[in-house]
Length: 244
Image 1 (spheres, rainbow, N blue to C red):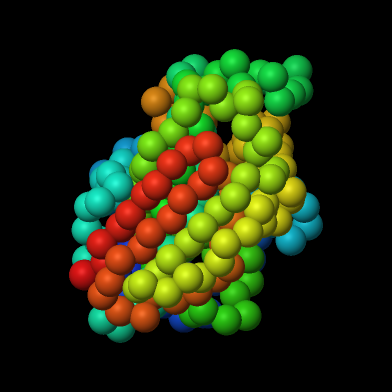
Image 2: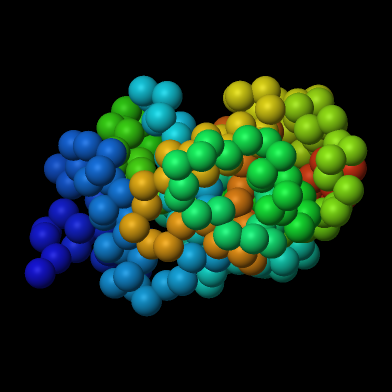
């Protein structure tokens, strides 16, 4: 039987609603469990992963639903009462599984398992309050992820100076940022390496064919309304998203 807290998250995800702090889980383990239960209850499949870190420094990841993937140039239907946050990110497309194992993964292992690195736009639409969120609640909410746009990429990713790529981001015709780097960890691949070594999900792990997005290169901004999101990452290419 699904408990009331998990049921509230499931309904919020299904109906694009917001739930309050009363439903906040207390631990990371509870956050992971709610996320997994939500995916199963909605009959979704894992199309990829959003990796990051908890406040204690431990690696975390949330599943990105296969149904939420779009291609560059396609349209996202926003919800009038819900802030939509686009983030420009580098992602890895896996060609091989990265199962849990006792031997630590290193950078070369991740590179050998990848088929390409690509530019992506993560679409964030929270089902929880925007401010002062207990992190386990953010994790239960799949770290805000609701969709992901895939753009072009490269198979020659080892030649990229990954921490220092130029990223240009326009939103509704206005320049948001143009800078080199910008990833919170410096090296965008570190969150994936760390998660591969600390995996604790219950929905199948890192699998071939999935997209793993590595974290935002751009500041947190809210899309002001309908319009175009445009971005470029050096060495990867251009990407757009129409927001209706």
